[in-house]
Length: 419
Image (cartoon, rainbow, N blue to C red; front, top):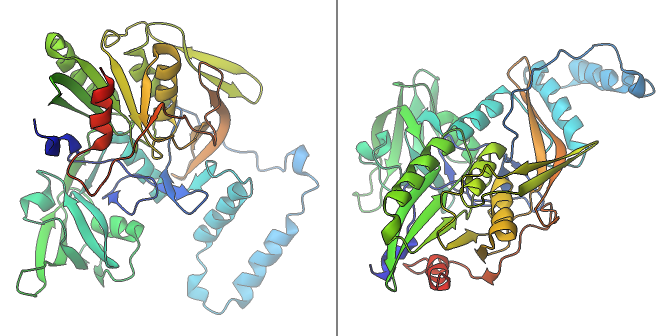
């Protein structure tokens, strides 16, 4: 296989930290230091029953003065010039967001119903849309890539097409896209199944005239695990690209493990590629690490009052294969747990760039109005006792992929290191 094939970019990429690329209808993000956007990650997969909060003021906040809040509320209601902008529900949401932001913890966040729903869709790995990755070309909203086999691809939409205008009669939408944020674009182009949205596109070399494409929305399924067998330097390597830990990950992972085991006699090693993997459900991290680690602690959760260790499940179906783990600055949370556990417990060599450093646990509470509250409740410690938070997981071999070449330098170096 020629080196040009080693880039191995999947048809669907996960959200890249700090990037302007966003899979249409993909992960909700929130601001972190430096202005980058990181999708909500490492959410403990458990159902939390929402209990109605006692409306009486609890004893520990009796001395807090709430009258100032209502004083400001009254002034706005009475004196603010544009009364049409006084949306009381949005004002309440804003107050709650300010309360969580006051903690100074970017991972403890309040999500109004629409944003909370999008987080669920990302973790579920499916939503209804047209199937395009969005970005900007010279400040204009553009198609980065149509997803193969999805409505946009089937209608002939191409990478590089500029999206000038969006029309949706059901939504009452008929707007130019100039000035739209990616979130606005996602909200406006997504919609219910079998509904129609019209995109007015401009394509270089198409005679200079914009043209309209009618797209019927359908379910967009985003795989979280992909497998490619790579042949290089007389080696045949299973390259697993794990882009997130979502609801579909376990089933997809089991399928690719079965494929590898079916061809075990011809596989010389495994590359577990978690570059730009922002995390997701914690249980998925334990499942993946257990495929390589037979026993012992994978990670410890250190809470406010207690600590709890999580151990391997005793499977280690892939434990016999030489392993290299690929990470970068976009690898966060659950992917850092897996990388650190494989380093500490399986002796796996980490290749690429030091990881992001998101080592706290968020408990996701569903509120009765459809909003979500994500609350930091603990921190993670790797088997050797290292904290992930802010520090990240260092690599043994530092190498970056040169996006200007037609090969993936990190993959090639990892194959070389398999010996």
